[in-house]
Length: 304
Image (cartoon, rainbow, N blue to C red):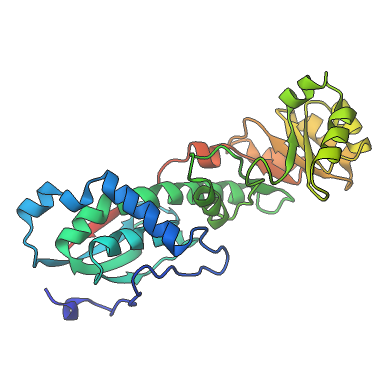
């Protein structure tokens, strides 16, 4: 099988070139991509794939198509590209769906032409990256669609896999969501356990973080009742995290905030309830499930 057999000449991408997707730049540098993917290939012993080495001749070339088995939003293409290129530096790849693209069932994401050994050994690593990140993007997209037409933005949390935060938050953006704080140093979030350390004194907690945090650091505080929300707004909180409140209580907090600070619903948000939460008038709805328990998007690599 020769390259001339490939229908629609693939877009030739130089080794490890990372496409720049206009809506959300990929969060890892070229060196970071190579390091991460190389580590995953080493973990899988991709360079010692005894099944492939035993059954496939080194000169054998093949074509393959990475397709979606179900609708969703694609994410993680640069990582898959790196996996295939590390094992076959001359592989030809046509990118049909870049990160953030909505997919229908059976739509093509990538078309590949290269050495069969390399494509087979890289297959699982490429899919592992893409299925997980595409799962996050797809779940986020569902929630975003569910609140369409309301004022609310869908927001992620810090409930991410250790070492994967930048990738998972990028996947949320690919799905149309908004990122919450990146880490503990980027913003203040006073939660119930912090308040317990100051005997529940909201004013004191906010006073202390104002004195300690760099000027301009956003201050958010978790409240459980409209009474706490009123105190927090009056002492200058910039954002209220409305934790596990009823919809009626959230409406009351939105009225209390009345443009003076941001309101964010949190806690136990489900797909079935998110629309009603959005209709309370909150500015944001944070959902830990976007990153801590998304179902993998069903993607597959079909060889010809």
